[in-house]
Length: 557
Image (cartoon, rainbow, N blue to C red; front, side, top):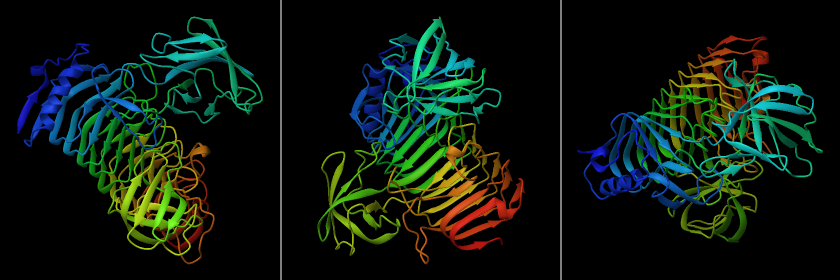
């Protein structure tokens, strides 16, 4: 194995040198052009990376905004048998810079460093007072630069200037989202909530509700609580993996980015071992990531997530799913024009020629049949032409969907902690074998959600075998905007057939539930549900704890 020490190429810790990117490009080019396994060593310290001489690519990243040209620090395209070892280093990225990009990569490991950004994509303020439609906030202007002009507030960074479309209240004593008003959005549409801003003194601002929006008063918000000011689009994750194989993240801490922490598409075998998503100590802000901690779209092989910490991110901890591409037009007996509907999925490929597809009925989300793609042509980011080897199932129509079933992962998540985040824990929509065990959950919403739909997010699909065992659920699902039960199976469909269910098998065994309201399991459209051996501290009895609808078999064995 070849060992490359970055200081030998001019990259030194502690220096804010914009030339680091140029030196890094040279190193990665050498790694890319050799078959020899390589280890890239960063001696312990803090390293800064700027966009000036960065790689540049046009990327369409699932569940993110702005499919535009991205600047990339570590472009690992075509890298093989490479380990990047940080030795407990801190990597600081400047401006809107995608930290790590994997494409057509194989056997690549990231190990032993943290990821953070010089200017966080969000800001925070502390509630000073609430008086009906008015609220005063104290904002650290040095940490979160802003200005007020034309009765509007603008937050600035190294290369951005944004207003706030959303905010969220946090209870700093509990270190988690507030159970009160929680969050709200601002806009300029006729019936949106609209705020008039003014600066009373340096670092002290007042916002007053005006207009015809839903919110008429800030009553219910608590002085001393923190408001997370969400003013940046979700336009880049910290790491993005696509069309790759055998990727490992080990002992990596992600403190912040404007999107998700780890996003993977069309990737086979990915391991997260001792990965932490958390707020940086001493950073002056509560939040960690702006969105999901991890997100996996059309992966296959094995997704393993072991001994990880996911906290304070402003969305879910883990989300695993495919994509329903909606039928726009039936062109012939074996040709379809399909559409990517949700704006955060535009431009994501539906698959490759030779992939196996399922034809999904709009009303039930059940499969009408399968066929292999003979030809796929991406017309633009919205529409794709697909020709199949076989004739289309009888009755296929507009609004039905296709789902790529060549990308279905088995999943193992164990030994992880999910706590104090906005939204939910694990969203598990995979037709592979899924095992969730020995984890601890304390989430504002549902801890484990099995969902998917073909009308909103278009996240597929049906599940076959999910086991949830030996976990601890501590006061989850306190904010009902984000779930109806600690564990929930709820896939919106227009029709449920009496003799055929969308989800096949869910086993919930030997877990510990601590709940204030006793809503433990809410499941529908499942063939078999097993709820056995669980230790429950909650009001009521099993009759209240378990709510079932359209379930074929319920077992307490």
